[in-house]
Image (cartoon, rainbow, N blue to C red):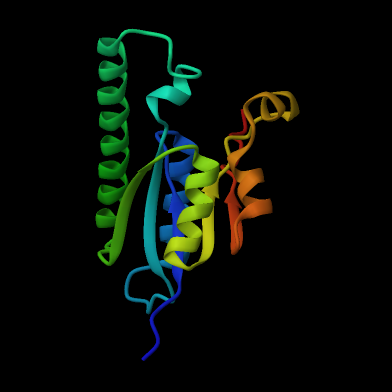
Length: 158
């Protein structure tokens, strides 16, 4: 019997990524339905050096504190994703935290896991912010060797 294809869902601490995870769970992993995919949730944790520029700035103590905070945030993010999956009765899910630039980490994870689809949340950045910060979803859409689904959170009507 063939293994189910892998669906990779990227999460960070943003509400946009958790919306994408929730949307995915609701639409692809509904209760009492045969699931076509194996779910793998991944968090790309930035390295302290990437946040400090070239890593030469700051004392060793500051870098240690920053590293601890980044690890704590990543762990909290994965725990929230686990709880969300558990609440939706999705038990056959693997979780992973990988350090590095999210663009590279996610494209590498697609290859390593032989993912069929990569799901990302959209932060909804405008053109200027996207140009300055870069868009992980845009990069992955062009470089990941699989289908990329970008889930946009609906705008609230006032």
